[in-house]
Length: 145
Length: 162
Image (cartoon, rainbow over all chains, first blue to last red; front, side):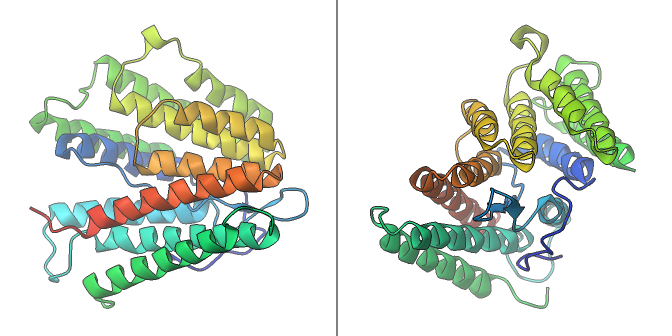
């Protein structure tokens, strides 16, 4: 499951994975409504390039795969995790990736708009939150799950 | 394949509903409406596969344009509508209409929901659209809100399971 690497820029903007996303999404939503939990689809979105707002960055494909992983993680949880790691590790990894991807976007904006109030501070804060997220995942989730 | 996946997911959800009174059951309004939404997303997929972006947008518009009295209320409705708004916003953004993308995403966010990834998705796509519009401050605000939601979800995912 790719959770951090950026795909090639020429990935189709709207890949034909939409229902592959929606299917586990709907299932999980409805299951989650029973467990009073929130659904957790992972959508890093995309970053418009400096020229013309052309989309780049993690596309729907990553969201689809992350969603499938999340749904699988939910199934794993229901089936009881035997590794000793928190049951949400499959969800935590892409969430940490999302946090770090958003931090990089924030920093890119701050760097490109020096007149933005508190831009550098917001960038530093976002990167610190990225590090914190990674540390939490590393501390809680074995790499060889 | 996609339709089978969706059918399996809905079936799983409905089967799970046997032990949960809040879940929709086959034949009730929520399940019917949800299945209809899924069918229209599948239609949009087919149209996009043929490069018919405007037609796909029109199909998805029929979902969010459903009169309130003709769809069930509650969380399934909210998340399916927000997911559709998210998709509409992405299509608008990919079609180089960032202002329309902002409007679509804002409409989805106006449905509420709080700290879940549906809201986070809408914030990310709106941030991207605002970035494309040169609205750096507003984009940064959206990204920061999305980041905060992801943090909350991360915390939840690592919390011990009761």
